[in-house]
Image 1 (cartoon, rainbow, N blue to C red):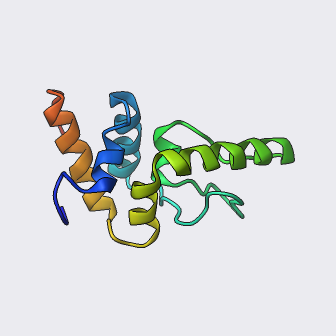
Image 2: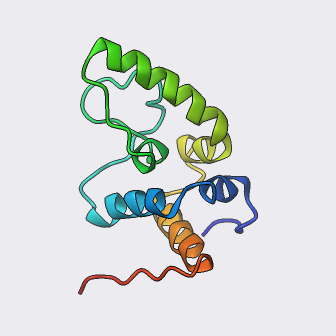
Length: 117
């Protein structure tokens, strides 16, 4: 993992619950979903959510009313998870870095993840 666990983006990830980390981890492990970058306010096209939106369980909006709610939620999350979002959007961390961070956080919380064979 680039850097250390004392980096600000890693600290942001520790704010996520175990369920939220697992939601993100499962999307990564599945390999069929590509997390969006810079798609916080107006997701154009298909399902475009960043890792934090996925972790929090938010879906892409499909109506104008949901778009307004999505934008409001995105703004709040952007403030709370600024360091992680910047690291992700600017390419300072990769999916592999996020996966390793999730495993490290869960390990530190004494939760073991076993891989399917």
